[in-house]
Length: 223
Image 1 (cartoon, one colour):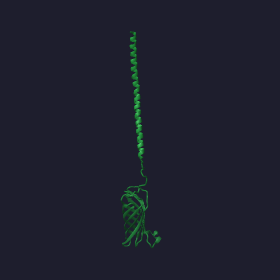
Image 2: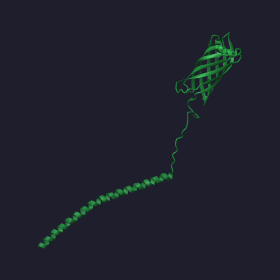
Image 3: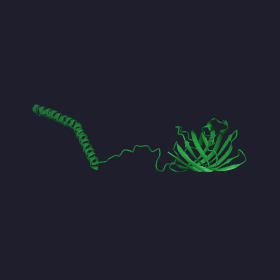
């Protein structure tokens, strides 16, 4: 009887030991399975990345940089961006010194550039020579104000001094104060294409012995 009891107690001990062994084995097996699963996922991601890189290399994508250059004066520019110009004009001058005389005239004007960037108005110095057919030419230096300088229509005003150079006086005309006059003008310029514009202008000259009015039209060539 003692033998049977002893065997039963040992059997119970073996069963308990086996149960504990199975439980521990299962507990230690779970992390290993989880780690194996995560390792498999990492390997799959690595393979996908390699395939993506390989696909991009096969495509051979070339990124072209944006062109760099000076586009201040494009072929179809939308604004007048020129700073200097040479104008040629023709018209009629009316002198009221002794009675009234009318002369055909042709003139040249040069606009001196500056670095102003005002959108509403810019000022420049301008020199001009107007040849009166049958009369004395006018040499003038004036300050010019241009309103809306970058637009298609530009309004201009000038104020300065002029010299009526009599041909018979030659260089003596420069020292004769009666040949000097105050000049003023108002005009409009219309931008046609690139550096080409059309202009119309009215000039007035007033001096001690000079009263003259000029009405002219012409072309402006800018660069």
